[in-house]
Amino acid sequence: MASKRLADYGGEDANGSNHAQGRYQKKRRTYTEEDAKLAKIYENLASEEDHIRVKAAIDLVHTCVALNDIEGDGSTETLSKIQNRLIRGLCSSRKGARIGFSLAFTEFLGVTLGLLSGESFHKGVTDLIAIIEQQTKAEGGASRQVSSNGHWMLLNANEYQEKRDYLIGRVFALNCVVRSRVLFKDQEHAQSLPAVIRELCELGKKSSSSWSKEECGLVCYQAVCLLVRELPKASETAEKALETMQELGALKTPEGVLIWLELSKHMEHVKFPAKVWHKDDPLHAKEIATVSKILHSVKLGDDDDAKETSGARQVAPHFAWKIILQHVMTLPDKEVKKKGKKEQEQRQSAEHVENKVFKQFWLEAVDSKCNHDDSIRQRLTLYQICSLQLPHRQRRKLLAFRFSRILLPLLRLPCFHKVSVTS
Image (cartoon, rainbow, N blue to C red; front, side, top):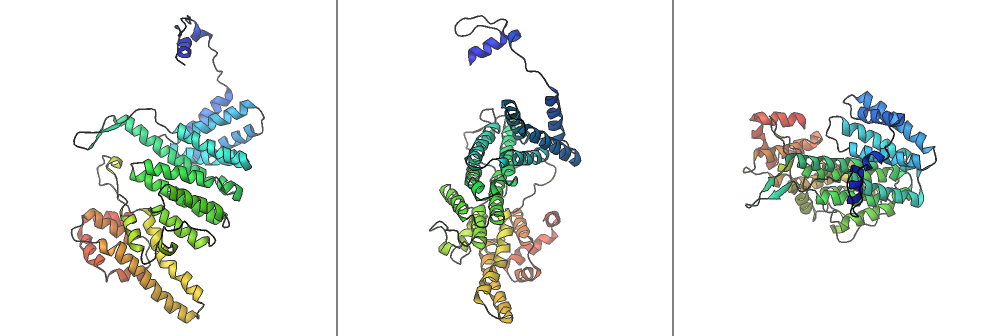
C-alpha cells in the first residue's frame, strides 16, 4: 500500500524502484457529463429551498431507474457511488442537507434495494448496514479524554463536532431504511427487520448522547409500528425483534416498553419473552413502579449536547411519556369490551377502570416525583408531561393531587410561559 502511494507521487517503493514519472503515467478518470449532472443534483439536495430539494431527489430517482435498466458493471459501480454519496450527505451539517439527502436516500432504496427479493434482499440489507457503518465512521482519533479529577475534557472541538455529525448521519441513514418501507413489502422482506433493530439498539447503547439514544429508540418504535400496520400477521418477525432487544438489554427501556405495548395491543399471537414483565404486562400494578423508574432514568439532556446560545436550552420529556399516557387512558376500552355488558354498564365500568388505572400510574410516575425541593427545570419538565394532550376530564383530576400544589407557583415565573407555549 505504501509502495503504491510512493509510485503515484513519484519516489521509490520498498524494492528501491524509481517511480519519478508515476504521477504522470497514472490514468486519470474522465469527468463526464453524467458526473456533472450528479454533482449538480448533490448540490441541490443541500439547498435550503424545499422545491429545489424535491426536484433534485426526483431527478436522482430518474437517474437511478435509468441505470437499473442498463446491464453491466459500469451501472452497478455508479449506483454504488451514488449510494455512498447519499449516506455521506446525511452527515453534512449544512442547513438543508440532511432533509434533502434523507428524501433522496429513502427513494433511492425503494428503486434499488426494493427491487430485490429472497436471499438477494437479505444480503443487500446486511451489506447496506455494513456500508452505512463504514461511510459514517469519523476518521479522526479520540476527541475527549478524562482529566485527573474525572471530568471530561474536550481536546479538539472540530474533531468532536465531526464525530457528532457522523453519528447523526448514521441515525438518519437507518431511519431512511425504515421509512423506505422496503422491509415491509411482505413477510419475507420483513425477516431483515431484526438486523436493522439490532444496529439501532447497539448504536443507542454505545452512544453517550441522550439525543441519539432517544432518536434510535424512536426509529425502533416506528419500525415496529410499521410492521404492525403493514404486516399484522408477521408475528414471527416481531418475536425475533423482541429476542434481539432482550439480548441487547433493550426491553426495559422507554422504547422497549412502547414496543411491548404496541405488539400486545395489535398482535395477539406474538409469544413474548418469559419473565420480563408480570403477566406480560408492563402496566400491571406490580410493574408500574419499574416503568416509572425507566421513564425517569432518561437524562433530560447531556452536557455534550449543550450549545452556547443566548437563551436557555429547551428541555422536553422523552417521547415515550405521551404514548404511554395515551395507552393508559385507552386501555380500559379493550378490557370493558371483553366483558360484553350493556352500553350503560360499559360506560360506568370504563369510567371506574380508567380512574383506577390512570390514577395509579399518575401517582407513581408523576405525582410522587413532585417535591418542593425539585429544581425549576424538573418541575417544568413535569408540567410538560402533564400538557401532553391529556383530555380535559383528566386534567381536572390532577388538581386533586400534590402535582398542582407544587407546580402552580410556577405560573408567576417568566420561564413558565416559554415552556407552556412550546409544549
